[in-house]
Length: 64
Image (cartoon, rainbow, N blue to C red; front, top):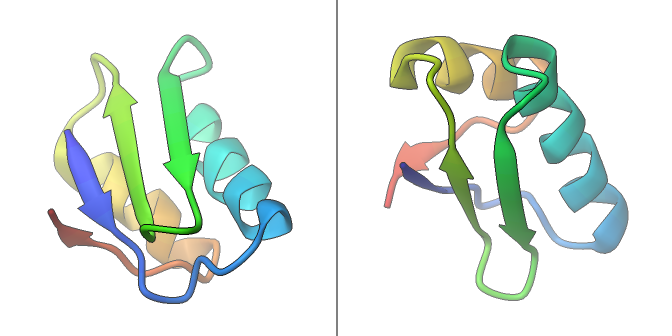
């Protein structure tokens, strides 16, 4: 799944996004790119649960 996160602007943001996803699925593979403001996730967790974790962490995401 892929999300666009408008307020992911730096490496610190990318780390926070990664931690938020891993809080839902510790085995998730996460590729967060602050330059394109996208995050690509390979996970068995639902899109809704990951989207909620991102929003709760302060990184509301839209489907990319």
